[in-house]
Structure formats: structure tokens, C-alpha cells
Amino acid sequence: METPRTIRRIGILTGGGDCPGLNAVIRAVAKTALNRGLEAWGIEDGFLGLIEDRVHLLTRDAVSNILTRGGTILGTSNKADPARFAVGTGPDGKPIFEDATPKVLRTLADRGLDVLVCIGGDGTMTGAAKLLAHGVRIVGVPKTIDNDLMHTDITFGFQTAVNTATEALDKIHTTASSHHRVMIVEIMGRNAGWLTLESGLASGSDVILIPEIPYDLGVVCDCCVERGRHGKAFTIIAVSEGAKPIGGKQVVTRVVPDSPDPIRLGGIAEVLCDQIAERTGLESRATVLGHVQRGGTPVPADRVLATRFGYQAMELIAAGEFNELVVMQQSRLTSVSLHEVAGRQRLVPLDHPLLAVARGVGTCFGEPAS
Image (cartoon, rainbow, N blue to C red; front, side, top):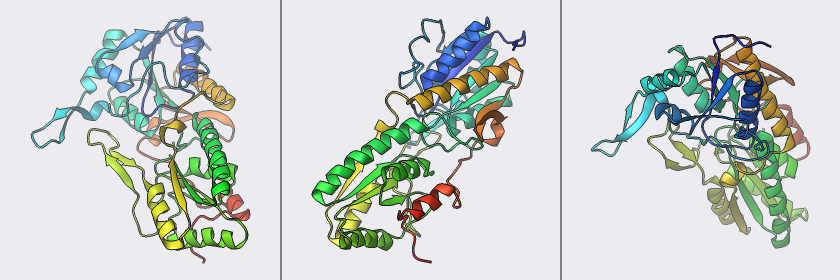
């Protein structure tokens, strides 16, 4: 497909948290652009690179042999929202924000970047959508281990994170069985339970707690005790960092005032560990997987998906279809408007088939009996 003559330079940035597969997308976009006679420019550290004019040309050598590498060769930032950019702190210790959009527009003009390929999650797409009103041409690529972007059935990075979390749960299983303990494993995902649900189901976790289904502590404790009565002297609990009890709140580990998304969830595993031990007398331990879920080599499925997403982004650019996000719907690549995904999260529907499957094999979600 022939790219419009108005497009000569493609800018590529990765925003938000890192995840496996980012380099595969960078490679796909850059190589496709170069093979079509276009220039590919790497923007360092997400939108921060546009604000600070840190941009460099991507050569073939620069994007070779990066398909299997985790992380991102461009760097990333989850704090640099151009429309609300922290520039310091005031006398009260609170951050001072400014609109850095003019700096972004200046960098784009000075570097002659005709279109941006923004690779990221909901925070990155929200920031990207704000630039559309200023005439910036953007194509988005969905990235997040949380799998929580609207209108796409899957995001790259998710499958690798499921594999990492499942392997950890499998290893926890053996030590739980040996020591006859309740083992609680805290898994990322923010407000969405996709990662916990799939890794919990894949590992055969006895209890799965996700944000979409508030749990009853009594039901969880009863499950642990009941297993002991049936000869199972241990329990594996996969809990999402965003899970919360019925009528309760999520556990917040810290607040980052200068971040577009200041709330950092975490600590629910330790809370549950203490509560279960106190109420049941069962020996309990908590494990937090943390950022290990973001790292490492992408699994083959994510490498292929990321490459397909990157190529499809270039196809949209060639067709002159800007301000769109590449998505996967019913195993087919298509696109939706960036405005449709900005500021929204895709949560696990309460009628999702995987929930029925998990309940069918006896998994406890901490739900009170109806």
C-alpha cells in the first residue's frame, strides 16, 4: 500500500508501564516504514521525549535483533501527560502543573514528524487523544499486561504476563503443599481482573479474587478450612491488587501526586494473610509478584501479536486513517477511534464465560451463597 506523500517521517513512542513485546512493535513499525522509503524516529521516554525534544533517527541496525528483548529500547514514562505536566512543587509541597502541549507541538514541527505511533495503555491513549485537538496525527497500538483497554479483545504483553504469573503460582503450589499453608499471591491488574483470572485458572488456584467481584472474607476463610476437612491441607489464593471486600475499599500502597494516575494499589495479599491466619488459625503466607510480571522475554504469541499490531499501524497510516487505535476483535485486526478508549477501562464482565468455567471446576470467588 502506498503511503500518502504528505507522510515522510514516523515518530514512535512507548508510554506508561513497560511490558514484553514493546520492542517487537517498535521493530515492526520501523522496519515497515523503512521498507516503504519512510523515516522512523524514536521518541525517548514516551511523551517526555516530545516535551524535552529527545528524539533520534531509528536505523535498521537500531531495530535489528530486538524482537525477543523485553522492555523498550526507547524508554518510557508514566508521569508525562503533556496537558498536565509536573514542573516542580509549591510551598505546600504539592506539585505544580503546566500545559506542555506547546512544547510537544514545537518538537513535532522542528523534527518534521508527520504522524505519531503511540504504543501504550489507557493512560497513554488518554494523553494521545488530547493532542488530536491540536491537529496531531496519531495511530495507537494497545499495550498493557492488564488487558484492560476498551474495544480490543487482547493487548500485547498480556499473554507473557499470564505465563509469568502462572509459573509463579505453580511454584507456590509445591511449597504450599509441603508446608500445609494458605498461600496468597498478589497479581497486578489495577481495577481489572483479567490477569488474575487467567493465571489463577491456568494454575488451578483454589480461590481467585478479582476487583469485579467483591469478596466475603468469611466465605474465603470457610473455603480454606473446608479444604482441610477434605484432605487438602493447603490453599492457593490468587488475588488481584485491586480486589476488595464487600463494602470495603481497595488497599492503596502509596499515592504519587505528580502522576496522571496517582493511586498505586498493593498490599491486599498481606492484609488477607493476617486476616485468614487470625480467623482460621491456619498458617498463611503472602507473596507479591510485583514488577516481575512486566519483565522478561515475550512469549511467541506476544511477539507475533505485537508484530501484527505494528504492521497494522503502518497500514492505517498508509491508508490515511489517523487518530485510530489498532485493536483485535474476534480474531480480526481492525481499529477504533482513540476517543472511544481514552479515559476508560475494560473490566471482566460478570457474565464472562471464564467465570462460569472457574465456578464449574469449584473455584471460589469469595461470593456469599445466594
